[in-house]
Image (cartoon, rainbow, N blue to C red; front, side, top):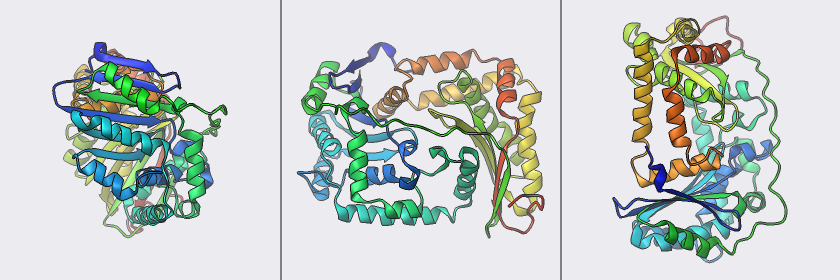
Length: 421
């Protein structure tokens, strides 16, 4: 567990939220700069713009070229990179404590004064389009994309963070600059710093680099997300592969819900690891699965609880039925006390393993803050999980596991003839 007494949260005058945790065990400092943007903030016609912004953000500033930035980072063995998700944007850095001031200063220039070179944008657009095309050849990705689109309809969660070939090809440098100007502002930033640096020095450093940056008078753009109307149905795409991918998806609670911890427990029980229910029943005992698992991502808005199996084409129908039986078993049967405790211990163990390094701790603390969960969510989640009973788990299963969206990708031969195309 993260030491709550060692976490400091400071709000600068310009709105930047700074979270610091001193850890002198290793001579390493990790920093994560989060912004409340991501693919859910994109207009549908600009799907993929956050990903492109992340790809070109470090490729030049008003003073430095892409090569000069790379040399500054590599000359001291530091790491610096940017990424985007559905719910947030992230610039990460890690270095030895001696070089942290210089690398953090560089991050400030990258965040505030990117140049977005036209040649770099065009290169990243080509790479992104290649990645999108490549994903169309991956049955798992195709199946999950089909499932997301069914479940989320016009909501931004329906689309990949990469966007589509059509939208990416039409995004311009001006579009990226405008997106940056709209969302890259101090009152939309959370900075998390963990490592061999004390709170006072971290605050002084952030003030030095970001303190003169004032938020514009105009408010942040209003985010109006469409309502998701549950309409479960089945869809199939034929693809000449050696196996079928079958996914069952259920709209599920967001991270702020009291159902979050029970759903995380059910996800662990069903599909987490070689001892999980799906693995034991469908792969070990029945030999139906090449791969079988479940996932329930943490989302600020409506999430999804998804189970999937990769199986031989001739087993498509029986594997689909097997998946559904295992999910619906949670609705009709209580978990035994042993199943409950094993699942809790497995989840808490993996949760603890995800908080070993300065980088992992910085990630988690900044992530909680950017999702408005607060720095105490780490202990709160574990307390909530410990209190989950078998009856509560069954009640939550009854609430969400009603009728699944079903996505199947595989060869036409051996497929279920009753599937709607």
